Amino acid sequence: MGVNVNLNLKIMVRIQVLYEVVKQFSSDLGFPEAQEKILKKGIEERQILREVILYYMKDNGKAGSWVSFEIDWEKHQMLVNTEGRKEITINKNMTLLDQFAQWSECIVKYIDDMKRALEITDIQVIYRYRKEINQDPEKQKEADEFLGLKTATEEIEMDSSVGNQLREMSFESEFLSELKISIG
Image (cartoon, rainbow, N blue to C red):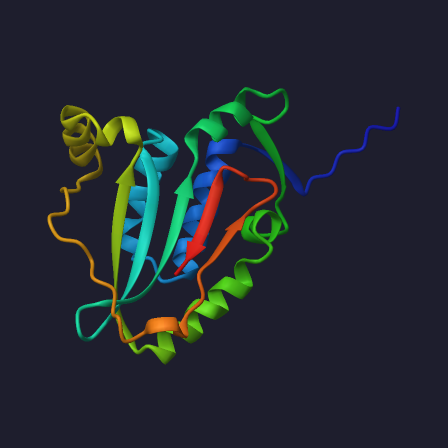
């Protein structure tokens, strides 16, 4: 009886993999550690965050660049409801980023170079809720309270002096196609 058991493999629920990939990637890009709890609650626990945007701020108070993690929850739900897609087999010997976002290392290097070149001094994080939450003031208030956030009253201004120095790029993982990462 030849049963092949690979102890390096582990089964994870898709939502956990999605959360862990966003958490690891955003951490590598300078996401404030104190805000990881918001990611866990907004992605893994309640699936209410549609987008997380990291703005890289210059000393003039304007953003020099940004990175966005956008989750398509409708696509996620469709994938979860498809046979064999709710759980994902992962290799415990590799990071999730190496398995699901092979290009992440290039993005992290690009952002590190950009932060040095633009003399970035701070990171501000903006969270956007799913459309059905944004359209209902009561649901938005409930989400704000759950995550410990408040509705932004000011827009973050981009530094026009940066101009065409940066490229806009978007990336999607073949294995986590509900997650889109954009840089601008």
